[in-house]
Length: 271
Image 1: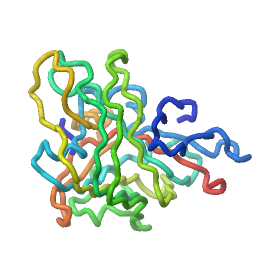
Image 2: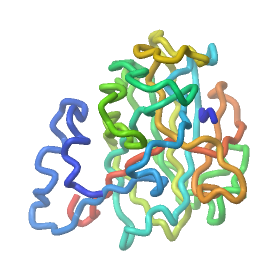
Image 3: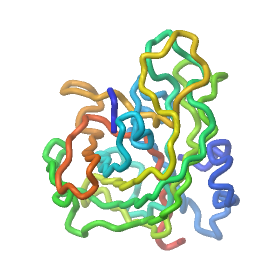
């Protein structure tokens, strides 16, 4: 819930589920250019999310245990694709700063948290993000929705905030969602809908600010995201999300933001 590539980035994939799935990323088996990584929204690829934060995986902050969230990314964020390509992995990163501007440093500590999780991908109906419905099921395109990962003990792992980075530089992507079922995405068919339904299985420290200036060891994992945007902002109609803390509810509430996500695409002929 919002509150406010390239294969050269080997450092981003350190600790990628510890399964070595990105080893040999540049070995395409004779399939030149078969893999591409795209960060959405594009504007925040190399920039921290402007003091925004998404608390999808910090449900304790709301005294909640469950969440259903659809994250929408405009199809124009995927202009680097030459045609339909398979999404094989999604990566997230934790935010640099949350709270008063004077508060910096490692406010997010290393985390390893278990969730009962289901991840889905789909297109949306063709049109702008402002035309989406508050009814979850109405935000799937003509090809319906695909469950790309179902894991009753999915582990979110992150090294937390890196205090040594320069101001404005984002943390590396180190929260990985490796899909059991790759999803064929065609931007010409609609915007991208990245959905998850999660239930927390353990309690972590996810208190909300205010926090004291100089605080250096608290919170997490707050996901990097822009603050809620408004008409006239250059991210307006580029990202949006719909959420509900009742996973059985057919409807949700909108926020004009979404987590910064890196999608790994592969050529379907090479997969």
